Image (tube, rainbow, N blue to C red; front, side, top):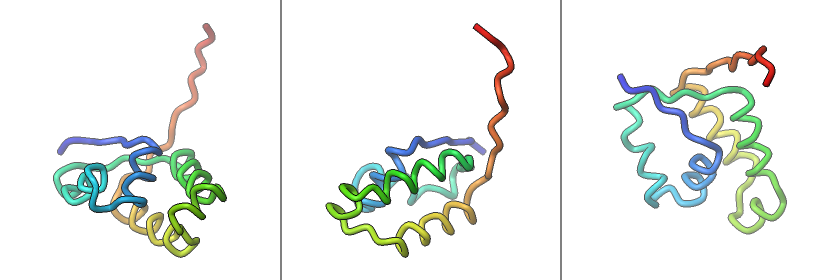
Length: 87
């Protein structure tokens, strides 16, 4: 099974426009394994709760909570490893 990592913009676009091109990616979610991390989920919440975004697209806390529940239920939660190498 193909492992997929989406960035924050993909999740935000999918919530704002679920019938759009990006939103359609989630229709095929059973064909791949979605990988998320806690920092990614936190960033998604930060973007969606930003006043400019939440007002413009009428995103309420319940919508965000519902999306997080779905993501946690249907994805694999990865823990990013720290890079100990210095440049």
